[in-house]
Each structure stands twice: as structure tokens, then as C-alpha cells.
Image 1 (tube, rainbow, N blue to C red):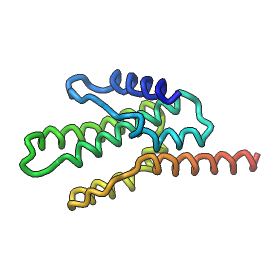
Image 2 (cartoon, rainbow, N blue to C red; image 1 turned 180 degrees about the vertical axis):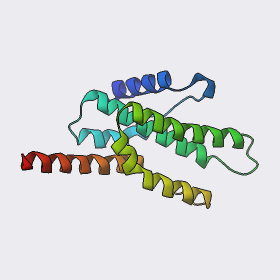
Image 3 (cartoon, rainbow, N blue to C red; image 1 turned 120 degrees about the horizontal axis):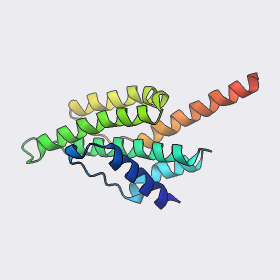
Amino acid sequence: MNRKLMEDSFRLLQAEMSPIAGIQLHLSPAECEQLFSVLERHDLEYDRKVHLLGIYIILTVAAERHMECAPHHPDLTRNILDGDYLYSFYLQFAVKCRELDLVAYLAPSIKKMQIARSNGDFAAQNPAAGIEGFLIQEQNQQSRTSKAI
């Protein structure tokens, strides 16, 4: 199941991403394991799982590219541009997948992380935790709405 989910997510992302950017998205199943366990805990349609994994992949690779930005690194400019493009692509992809509420939920933590990195703090981020927090909040809102009806 996870293998098919990854294949479908990568295929969708590659179809949506500009070929001019020349960015290849790669994550191993182990790197996706945090999100797989989140998705297993929530009752979601398959297409939404594909979209959420796609968002996770984009955010993870964008953060990796920005973490590779060391002074005098031969690929410094490329890493900066790739990371910036991927953060823009994340927004475009999330809008297309109708995950605007997720974008709004993640925005403060992503911005704090970007500010911290600009100040030299390269602590690891965990987009799976942010996505799970959003899914829990969404589930609680749905539960309250169904109780009110």
C-alpha cells in the first residue's frame, strides 16, 4: 500500500512540477515513514492521502535543499533556488489539491522554521507532525459539527 501511495504521489508531483526547474524529487520509504503512520491513524480517501504525501514530499525536499546551503558550496545558488521553487510549488500544489486550510495551519510553523534557518539554526523539522496536528483539528471540528446536527 505504501509503495503504491509513494509511486502515485511522485507521479502526480512530477506531472505538476515545471520541467524547466529540473528538480528530481527523491525520498525513500523510510523518509516517508513518519507520514505513513499519520495517514494510517486517520480515515482518509486514497486521493487525499496521495495529496498529503505529495505535500509532505515537497516540504521535506525543500527543507533539505535549504539545509544544503553552506557558504562557498559549489551548488549554493542552485540549492537556494531549488528550495525557494519547491516552497512556491508547495503552495501551488496545495491550492490545486484544495488543501488551503492545511496551508493556513502550517504557515506559522514553516515561517518560523525559515526565519530560524536564516539565523543559522538548522534544527530538523517534522512536517508529518504538522500534518497530523491539522488532521486532528479537522477531525475534532467535524465531530463537533456532527454532534450539533
